[in-house]
Length: 229
Image (cartoon, rainbow, N blue to C red):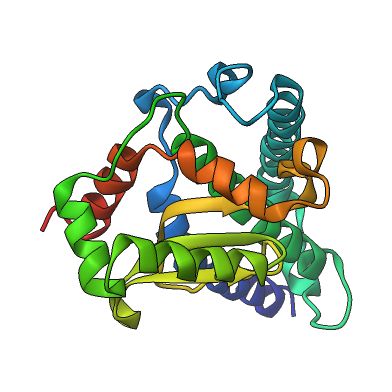
């Protein structure tokens, strides 16, 4: 019996690892690495349209997510996989929280990583790609803006090779994400991202955010997602 229990643990561990890798891969590929100099703290007080208080509070939440994900990763080894149950249990709760924290962390990195104090216009190649996908840069924006106003968590321009290439997506929580989509440009729609400065004015928040987009970052992400093609 002990051997069978151990075999089941190993089997479940393999399944859990494989599933996590499949779900997290597109988002993980878009996460800024430490070597890129990812330092969102520099944005506080530097972004026109965003108060320093708003950015600092948002970054405090990001840091909480980062620490929580570290704790979940460390707790993984202490879970008893033989007690897995779809109704209740620590493993079920752990996997759900890990997915939520991991997605939230990477999407926040994508959000902050494409903000800039400078005024940046889309590079010609990126604008041409948006024109092919949406008809024009303006039509892309109209679609993304509507997607954002209809969502509660995130709206994003993504590269989804399995879904036709460039498209806009919206989600209502941190667990939702198209499995094959890499985020290129992400806007945070949670209230913590905008209510302090734009209470009751989500349209104004979106307009201010658009002015702070670093389109060079978006273009680089698209090139990376397409494999440099």
